[in-house]
Image (cartoon, rainbow, N blue to C red; front, side, top):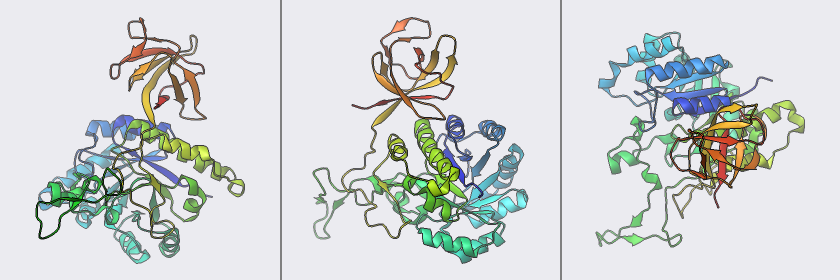
Length: 407
């Protein structure tokens, strides 16, 4: 049985490394041009080169987004950009615009091309069409059921890869093709600048009473009528794998390193458990607990089991944040049992933390003591990214995460 690819977001070089170390088979990243996440950190050419090299050193893949809906003035610079990505060794580019597809094919004929979900591919005929245009992988629209995905897999060329989303934010508009942000904020979501007006609170205005804003109550906080739940398919790994999709995608280039590592690790463990013995596979509730420890909204299964009836959140636009990412291990001395920690949130001596390694179960321990970079004892680590030395109850490795439950 050919194993599915677990594909993770890389919004920065650190997030790329965290995703791969915590179990992703491939990552997708955006450069400083032609991608749909203008407000992500994104990658300079030198960072992209380092990220691709890092992925390849682990035997894994790196894809680059060029999925902007392009205007005329942007076409001129695209061939040289595509050539540069090819020279860096990117394993594929992700596009949605037919014009961009044509540019990439002309500039770098041997580059693999993936078709973005922005292209709204919902049927086998259009999938076959894109394959005939040179696309090697289709990122299917999120509005498809398992049954529809299986039908597409059965009717398209066997060489054509299919990719589906399994976790992350959902868009109120069809496959993210949204004009709401452009209309209300002058920021085009199809050019990477979405202001997320779907998460705003709205009031009702009656035609003959302009300026009178009538509240629409779900509760005392109002109603968020466009606010989608987050997709989470961790409980349905067998159905996902049996759908015929070859790549399983986690959304979130704007999310934190902690989010990426936590979610990737949970899906890695679940997928590996399935392949170890498909017949004996049982869902482990700990996997759902793990993805719930990353910042998220209420979860939904999206369209996988048919049109969803409860995919919206009406009472709040806030995230659920039950845990804080407080530190990242950068080094560990096995002789002394002391770890070097880069602080990510305030932490205090005496607190209980969870220690999350790239592989295996997390464990809990108290922060018994801390020292600063000068070796002086401290009771708190309040400064962003300050260096902290801390005794660990078990051996750890670089990129181990320290997190704390919010009380």
